[in-house]
Image (cartoon, one colour):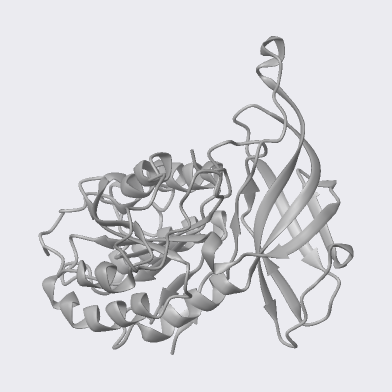
Length: 329
């Protein structure tokens, strides 16, 4: 049975005011936007008055709460190139999912190798082309090194524009002045080989924490689907990989999907849940948030509406230019 370790959300921030050089380390209060995923049993969407927000323990008013249009979304699909080649049986599910994305949503396809992401399809709304770029992972042990290195590198170097569109193709929304909410969905075993033992007593990886912090600063929620390879199926390694994926998802407002210690027969339920989470994500604008340069602030949200849960990242970076909703340059 599908078990969700982490429920949704995502965060992002936008700088609205500049700071004098004399106060480079002390940033003035700035309105800050965050992505909030709404889980509602009744379908009720809360208003700003229904939401309580605290930043570093201080009550902070919500001034607006608006949905994200499909044309304002970018999804980066990152596959671990170290997965065994039998993962190929999952490619039809992935291809079908890409071709049924909400019109206007941009999708990127890349493979995580040696701590980097190798793009095979830049952001595009040509879903057939993106689906056609999927391939079977190399399946070489250690080909990826660490998925967390890849996440850190990717969010720091997020592609800024989509590829030119073919004649007659739906136009891309990646144009100058267009803002996007950015999401990562990665498929990996989640193991960090650089943190030594996979013992339950050694689950404090600085590399996993760095990936979470880098994604928080960039305002990018990291979702993941756990998929083991032959070398780590079951046992401490599986626990370690799932634990790390959960840690990053929780920190960034993402979600981790898994099916116990086994690989799913089909990815479709997970992919559909991810799409629904993105579609039910809203932009909440926090009133002026005071902060210091490069400092992450704790965030806590709650709704007064019964049957409504809000999911957002645990920490945010107010005033960050390279945010998930920053203007494309």
